[in-house]
Length: 413
Image 1 (cartoon, rainbow, N blue to C red):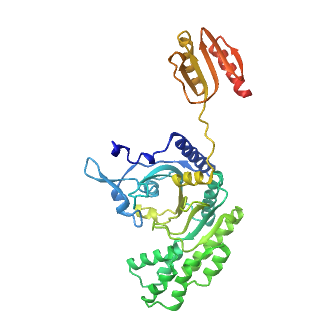
Image 2: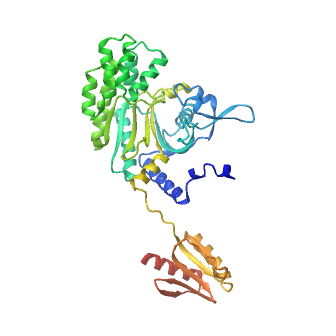
Image 3: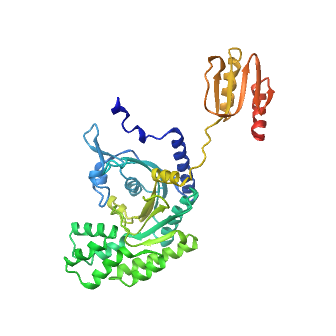
């Protein structure tokens, strides 16, 4: 029996499910205000689609299965790739898409969950600093909608680090190692790593500076300008300056920090990248960026940018911060009836449900009691029909009279 109960503690209680669903509703409403339309993807996707894309989820993190025809399938490990493929092969699709989907990945350890919910947006065909800034503004507004008072959006640029790497004689393995050192801000090991490569001093200085290019945007930009090694790095900094100017126009600059040591393990990102943190929660609750070259892998050139909110992390962060909304677990009406009233009570309950009321019925002769609270109680007992509310009894003769009384009482409640 114990084996069947394994993992049951990970299942949401009914209350937590309602809270999580409320959070998702809030996010979807904000997506709608920015002009995004809902889309969806299949839970089972072809393994070859992901395997053919450079820089996607590692194959060891995909959950694989075999379909009846013998093809290798995976449970959806990423949403951006199938949506981008759909956009690349179909002409005339609406270019602002949002989704709420479950993501499946092999966990690296027992503390991770192999399934999580992600709510995100993908914007295709726009490639401007204004579009980048709007995407960050949307992320900020979502965190504000969820009542987080202290949070930061960390902004980096995938191109800045890649353009610096181009100045170094690195193998793919060495490049990956340097990324790990920079992301962990491990200055102790970066210097000896570079010494072994016999890199010129000005390049060493630039690489060592990257982990410290974090904080106030103005400071980071000025410092980054002092270590530029090529024209592409200069263009990247100019682009970030433009994005920051637009963010100031949105009046959200206080929520922004720059981090040029920010590295996303999805290597298909080509431009601005960002992730959101809330106070008191150690993991990022949203992340995304620009991926202008991804659609080319499906045969079409099309710039794009997007991000995903990790709903489960947002839920736990809300819980830790005491920001979860109140969930109404009551029903509108509980109808009590006995043997003499059943033929009137049950049709009346259905009439009220058709009108949108939340209704529970209870046979008083079974002595069963419900623990679910209700705003009003209606009785069909002892050949009488009445509402009992606020220490008063209101009699009625028909379902229409009942509806009228309920409307009056709930309006006054």
